[in-house]
Amino acid sequence: MTAVLSLGMAVSQKGAARSLQLIYICFAGTALAQSVTRNAATAECEENHLADEVEDPTAILTQLQLQNLYTPRNFQTSAQTNTIQFRPVVPINPLLGFPLQQLIRPTFKVQSIATTSRSSTATEFTDMELFDLVVANWPDARETGFAWGVGPTFVFPTGRVPTAGNHAWQAGPAVGAVFRGIPHLTLGFLFQNPVSFAYANSSAMPQSQMQFTVHVESDDLTYDPRPRVYEILGWN
Image (cartoon, rainbow, N blue to C red; front, side):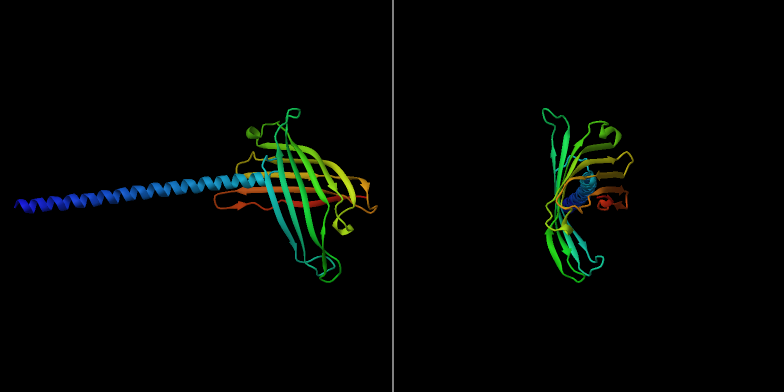
């Protein structure tokens, strides 16, 4: 009788140990799932914040942008062209004699240009662009959600042929701004207005550029198109 009771107690203890193990595994799995969910949410939040800063013309963020702009069809020609665009963004911290932050962004382009009405193309290095944007300290972007900057923009006549550049030295103002005062919405723009002051070609026509940025976030939708660039004005 004693042996039977001892065996029953041993079996009961063994069953209790298995139950405790199952409970521990359930709690551990729940904690792991919660940790993974939190990590995923944090990573998504950081990714959205980084996307905002990449498209923000006033963000103090070191960048190296490389784009390949493909055109499958051109006017009056069947040639397919490409433009490879290389843009480093270099932020500069406030200096001793200049207490404001700066953003320096050169733009280098290599473009395949249609040379005839058929499919023949030629690869050329286009005009180099550069702007130096000084980011204002007022108003406080953390409190208002609004940031802006202003500075000079330059175009250097590095294009060898007329179709690859304007053949003119150009300089003018540039201004950029971004607004994040509305939750889940980012609006920004960058305007550059270079003016020719020395011509290598009398028929050169400088053009102003307006770049818009829109970033919308929601629980099931994120709209983040690449910035749209518009050539809005030209003159002789």
